[in-house]
Image 1 (tube, helix red, strand yellow):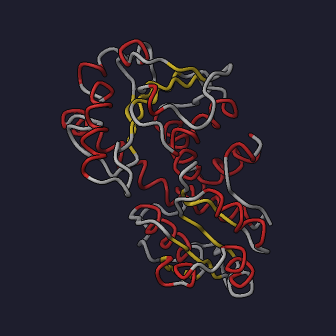
Image 2: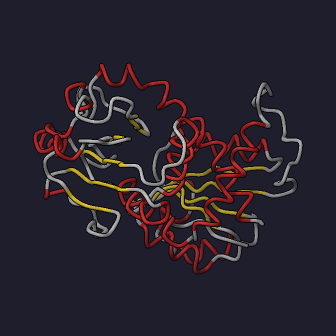
Length: 301
C-alpha cells in the first residue's frame, strides 16, 4: 500500500513509473466509449471514497470516471454530507472509512487534515488538492509537456501570478525532474515553500522572468473563499503578471502556456492567449484522467 500525498515524498523512479504507465493507460483507451471498462480492470472489487470538502469539476469527474473505467466503484461526498461538518475529527473519520472503502481521495483547504487522514487510515490516501499542494495536477502537467514537447529535464519553466498550491507542487517537482523553475509574483504573495535553490529562483519582474522560457504557467488569482473586496485588491496587485501576447513574445517562440482551469479571461490570462492555447488546456484536463488512474494503480502496486 502506498500514499500519494506530495511529489517531494516520492522518488523520481517511482514518479517515472507512474508517468510511463500513464502512456499505456491512455493509448489503451483510444476510440473506446468513456464508460467501457479497461481490459485489465485493476480496481475490480475495490471501492474508492471521494471526500471533497471543496468544489471541483475536473478532479471530481476525472477520478470518478477513472475509477469506473478501472472496474471499481466510487462514493463521492462533500463534508456537508458527513459528520465532519459537525466537528467530528478527521482521525475518527479515517478509522471509520478504512473499514468501508479501499482508498480515499481527499480535496480540502487544510493540508493538516490530509496528514491526519493519512496517519489514521489503513487504506491508501491520495491528495486531490489542499491549500498547500496539488500534486495530481502538476504530475499531469509534466506528463502533458513531455507528451507535446519531450523531456522536461533542463527546460525553463516560469510561474506567473498568485503563488498557490499548484506553484508549491512545481517547486517540489523542479528538483525531482531537473528543470529550472522561476516564480514571478509580487512579494506580498510569495510561495509558502522556500524558492531559492539550485533549481528554483524568484524574479519580481515578469518580463525578465519569461526570457528564454519553454513553458509559462498561470492559475486563477481568486481562491474559492475570497470576497469581492479580496478580488479587487488581488486584481490590482497581480495585473502586471497576466500572460498577454506581449509578455508571451518575450519567451521562446515555441514556448507553451499552461492553465489548469477554471480560467478568468483578461485577469491572469488574456483572451488572445486563451484562444491560442485552449487546446493545450484541454489536453491538461484530459490527462488528469489518465495520470490519476496511473496513480491509483501505483498506490496498490
